[in-house]
Image 1: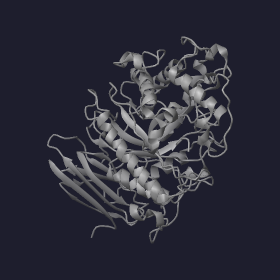
Image 2 (image 1 turned 90 degrees about the horizontal axis):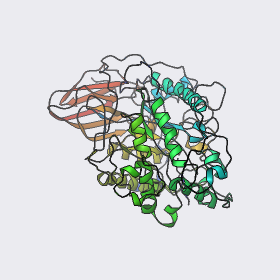
Image 3 (image 1 turned 90 degrees about the vertical axis):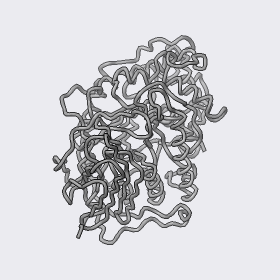
Image 4 (image 1 turned 60 degrees about the horizontal axis):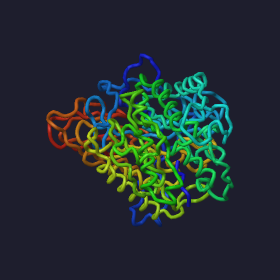
Length: 569
């Protein structure tokens, strides 16, 4: 989450783009006040007739096959332009949550009674909320813990990079085998996985997590723990030096090369797993040069890390010891069909410009986070709601502008885009504001975060599931009607969680995508008494009470769908 200063080879069928939604009743909250009135807006009130919030103790419900289920539609790809697409050519919109465990064993998996336990109850509850994707955290330290301590001269001496001899195949396979149980459990509930190599403040030595101890090279720089919010640790001298050695790859331990190698093993392990749709190479890239010199200096290094010396037209602009093959081509070599969710630098979270530019690879997804600066140092909740909302809206607008500047011969319309972190708050009004903006921009997302897990770089206010297993009332802001797959070009979408009203407009082409449009309708959240769809240019082909509305185009032209609460007369 925000940190700024002040494949298995199994034979399971290809993934369907549908998460069945046996939803239980939630308190329905208002979509939030208009931006101009946010500073005085109360938290949205429950709708009349709303019932209760489910918990992890709710009965686990395995999704059955739905009537009218469309053909299997994986894998996903990003051909260029803002949207992901499935194998039928439909536009795909993913919605879900982050699940990251930042202490040993640095992953979640089914292990009853342990704090890192991820159970069928978790996955079932996600599916009932309508989520179809999880950004699932892994860490370099968990994959390659090694044996050397920080600042060991055998790793940290300056010089040409070489093998640090810290890799253990047995340790890595054990870690991934446990992780595979989580991926399989999510798949059982028709939920996709994005694997996220997570880090905050680099390592535990700086009160963060991510890199193994052996990859910490500080050169003896002082490491004074500053008071205040955890993110102030980014400003310590020792953390700054450790980051710079990684980005410049200028120690004999070959930090970047080993990081890339470990990633290649992860990608190869999951390359035949249809439920792992892609990889996020590095969470919230940070360097002290962001503070001293602005974004362009660090973004040049970050681009070199992503693509490698062999793929840049100006190798002299990269650190001389960078690997020839960067992390993106390394991942694609191991899994050519994977989506690569590359991130801009950490300061982009608050709307600063980014200078990554085009990268010459397919299937790239511009993956960004959105957080505001006016937040409580204790909880992370906004201290100025209107200011936070305005800043987050500006960030979304700026990130959309970035897409044109990142267009390449492989993605002429620019990469797809995806908001992989936002929220980290129990403030329903702020969540209502940004989710409405995401709907208006036809943007997929994963909320931060599912559970707190005693996060060293966060607070309990960030979690959707509270310590007692109950969902926060904000769950009914995040559980929304949305189109998972659109058989055409989406033009507009709105949803009001206070009334359950939804509208979608798209353009169907004569020789457009095959298969129906699929719209998630959380009938036990917003429309427990049923719902009434009205369509023009298409016909509804699903059952009247189905939690997945299926729409078949009548032909080319504009298609309009509206949904209101209550059964049709």
